[in-house]
Length: 101
Image 1 (cartoon, rainbow, N blue to C red):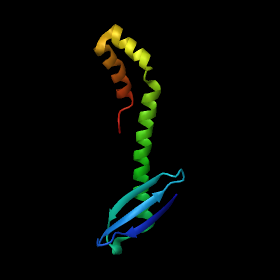
Image 2: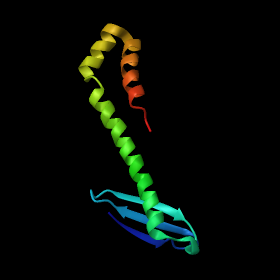
Image 3: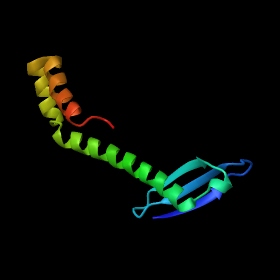
């Protein structure tokens, strides 16, 4: 993981942080802080941890839901035989098991 940290032109307390992850993914965020308060490694690590948690949470819930959803054919069959309410209950159970973060 590497990052660059630079002051935004024309902004007194705004810095841009660009992080390049080991997998090639790039995260960019802005930080508002004065130079006297600036502790780059701790500040950057805090934000990178926050970003990583959000990305991991998003990926985990979506992957887990996708693996448990029935195939489209099974869902259509459920709709035909059980109706919309039966389909909604089946899908709702999976969504409740793996809620969005």
